[in-house]
Image (tube, rainbow, N blue to C red; front, side, top):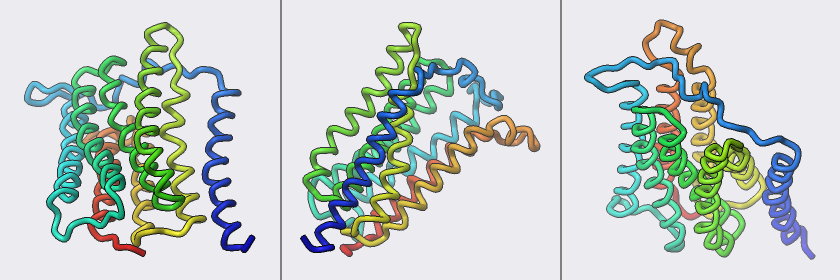
Length: 260
């Protein structure tokens, strides 16, 4: 077997085996992780125009805008985005529809933060992450894998949210599967970019998008600390804007990429 044939096999083993082992380790050795009740207590709860948590609510408009622009680009963009197969377009429909729905679901959640409303925030987030993962796997490892994963991964992502909510309702909350949905793409996508040849240009834009997502998670973690600096805007509001910037970078990639 030639080295060129061995390399893709080794890449498949790393890109699929490492996250699988990490997932098994998390589910095997970590105890169930319940939702912290303090999660719903955001630093900036100021109301304006009768809207509670005003900035955390209205900042979700960025998701709706980017998602709508993405869907418009897929269906009516000039020049039209390049896709090698219909399933690839469907994957990015999932990415941008999920982005727009994240804005709606997150705004609904921030109007009245509870576990019940948080479900509608998290469900579309899983659609974005899982549809994007299927698209990248299909591009880098083969169209057959992408076509199979496109329905399977979003279904698994939605199941992780349903499982979390059901476990909370039963008094034994467990965020581990949902945590994996957030973590695995951050491992798989960079591995695929590093080890597998691209079908399209602009692959580096994926890393920029993931970088914005990482920044968003930092803003989320430092919500109160950011708000304490001048009490103008909270970390969670900036989280929404940073995550929307990552989605916009994906839109930029889709608009400008060409076959490699």
